[in-house]
Image 1 (cartoon, one colour):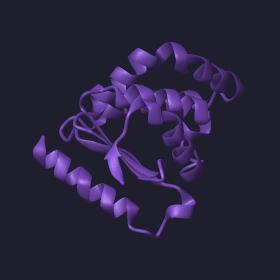
Image 2 (cartoon, one colour):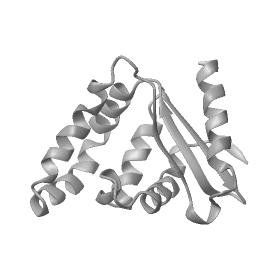
Image 3 (cartoon, rainbow, N blue to C red):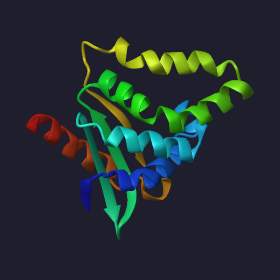
Image 4 (tube, one colour):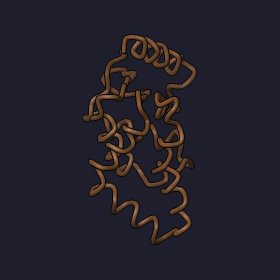
Length: 147
C-alpha cells in the first residue's frame, strides 16, 4: 500500500535511509540523527513524502520538496537543538567534516533556479527489484503535477 508519510514514520525512514546509503554524508551521523532530520523535513508544507507499506511496515519511501533551500533551512532551524550534539561530536572527532557541513548548509542555495528536488529515495534491501521505487516515482510525479 502506498500512502503519505507522517512524522511517526521518521524512525523507519531513518533506518532504511541509513541501511541503503551508509557511506553518504548525512547517514554517517547515524539513525537517531536521520530520524530527527526526517521528522523536521516531513513537517515542511513544501515536502511530499510517500511510503510503500506492506503489512504496516515501511519498505521504501521517497521524499521530495518544492523548494530545497527552504526545506533545508526550515529543518535545520527548527531541529538545530536536537541535531547540534551529533554535529559537534562529529566535528570534534573529525574536523575535516566541517567542509561537508558547510557544503550541506549551502546546498539549497546552489540550486535556486530549479528548487524542486528529490531529497531521498530508498528501498529496503530485501524489498528491492519489486518496482517499489518506480511506483513511488510515479505517485510523486502525479503529486507534483497536482501542485
